[in-house]
Image 1 (cartoon, rainbow, N blue to C red):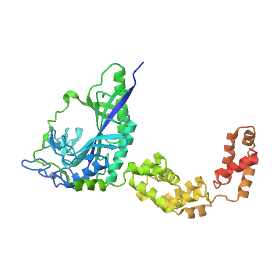
Image 2 (image 1 turned 180 degrees about the horizontal axis):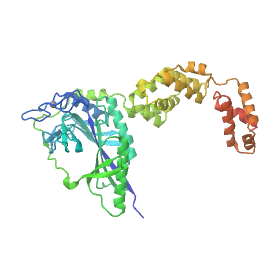
Image 3 (image 1 turned 90 degrees about the vertical axis):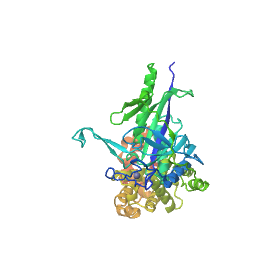
Image 4 (image 1 turned 30 degrees about the vertical axis):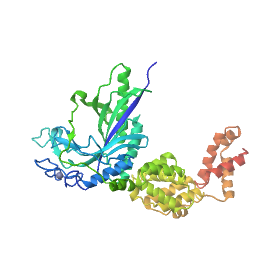
Length: 478
Ligand SMILES: [Zn+2]
């Protein structure tokens, strides 16, 4: 019998904090400016300079720690991580190794080992053949990013699949975005994710040899990269081989994994305490403030929406983006007695789809305010118009901000409420469609669908499906 294997995945997530200035100097943080315009002797590591910690960065870090349910350390310290590379002018990075500012947290199903503060490296740009140096290949360094405050979040190896990593990553991103301490833009690198991946026989508690996947810049790619790596490791083991510890890069264009370096080439960072910085000792007031200042976070909000009857998927969609959550709550507030489950389905379903269809309109630019959408939902719910007519109305509302009741009147979409009128259409449909009538009468009840369709067509979508069904069954003697 062959052994079954499961994936064991832990994550290291780097979050750039959106402070005004860098971690240890007063240089401005900005993305996309000309290279090397935001530098000074500190972040260029000129001789004799001393770092000064950014108080705002420490405050933001404490908020992240609190949001992840961590214990906030009463004392934390900075260390030097030594490595030699052009993006690192001091030849060491200031980080927290021995005593991070936050430990032992949890977000959703995943335990957080710790979170620590550090400074980002500068950005290296490899020009290929297009270098400025006599047209040759070159590596250029942009120190604008060097010294940006980072929080690194390290999880326990609690994740079991690429899909789970994507879902959990989205929850983490939404949580940090809600705090307002980072813009968590993966494409611009303000949120970066590394994954440690290993496999082990199901039921085993031991950890297998792990490989590290670096710097993937979207959760979709991370999901695919991890799935590819798990499949690769299972294949190796199935064919009697052993997984080798190495760092891998996943190329989303080809779906291939490339080795960046093996264990033999791995760094020994020779961590040592940073002598130029004192300990970080947040006051009790700072710790209390970090906890008290937390807004309602996505996980809690999703649970609250589910408590209102909203299905899990819609609850998560609404909770991950604050503006969607606010929009949804605006719809609920606009109309007494509106069913939150129905409202959530309209907001995340028909409305979101219509915005996408009309050119990916961002919610902030949508011409439909929550009150108008609530009115439309009410028209459908009270059976003034059919669900299909509701979608037609929504199309006009999204394209030109039309008032739903006006569209209904102008387009004559009001549902046929006179049952005598509807009955006439039903009788006509039975007369005009002998074939499905015959099929229904000989026991094939599914054939009634063709008759419902004929009535709907004749009523130009202005009939209530349930009522049409009832009248058809009545007249067919079912
Ligand atoms: Zn600087």
